Length: 180
Length: 180
DNA sequence: AGCCATTTAGTTGTGCACAATTGAGTTGTG
DNA sequence: CACAACTCAATTGTGCACAACTAAATGGCT
Image (cartoon, chains in turn blue, brown, orange, yellow):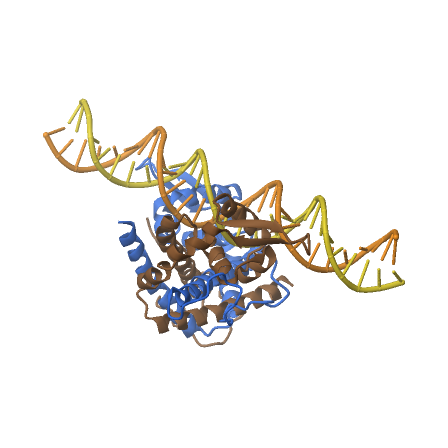
């Protein structure tokens, strides 16, 4: 979706609009209805924020020729130098089903190199190439532009991050429990 | 072996002169290093939270035979009864490229019906079928289970939602500005 | 009326997320 | 040593997000 030049037309995300009478079921007050509406707002908010973030990164990273997940991978590689796919996935909470094709594209782009570990033929070491390492210089501009785009002061960003991490931990545990 | 990051880069061109980032990692203050690390933390946190949320919904919605985006669509339809694709997309910030195949799958599953509007042959009205409307009863359980999974009290959920909506608004505006 | 910009869904192509499976490689145990 | 259990990466298949494009319908305009 192109950055919508039109401001949120009919429905700003925070609009707890008055009940639409078009619904087939009239709501019993205090029933699950309220919960459904709340649920729509909550899960939608997180989803929308994630996609909005993605959109900003998409625009900013276009110059570097990276997608947002590719940028995340490069950030980890810049920080750690070289890692087996497994370790990379642990850092990013991604599995080989996502990483294998992504890394193949990064290799085609000449940014990383993949080679079987000599010590353990099962594992594949991923390391940035010269070009991949050089790209880091150009990436230094990115974070400040992102932070500026949020319009949030740094301490609030940190607070939000802490909340989200707490949320993630709780949700992961809950998903595991539900799955069992 | 040496997890040592690549040697310290050149100093960033323009120091934003804001207060020093109180990042948990002690690194050369003001260097781009801090920012890259911070960026990794921030964007990763939101991304991870979104995917964790998705994971919990996936588990809970499996009984209903819905995916998370399909559930979002049904929530809107349960609330509004019937909508053209365009309106649906406005509510969810999704375009036809995403909605068309998704709605086709919902139609195949017998949950919605699509028909060209008589008044405007361009638009397609989407409305829940009997079966789709009936599914709502079984969905009433979902939100409570989600909220329970977060472990967050309701007021904190609302506060988080407000922050995320503010973030989304700012990011959308910034993406539009960058794109221009 | 005829023309034309706009609106609306749909289609195509690329890339990501994730479950399930495969197959090569490694390790523990008898 | 033999062999079962495990680990790791890759592959397959489904579904979503989004950009770019197509095609049809609409409405404004002269």
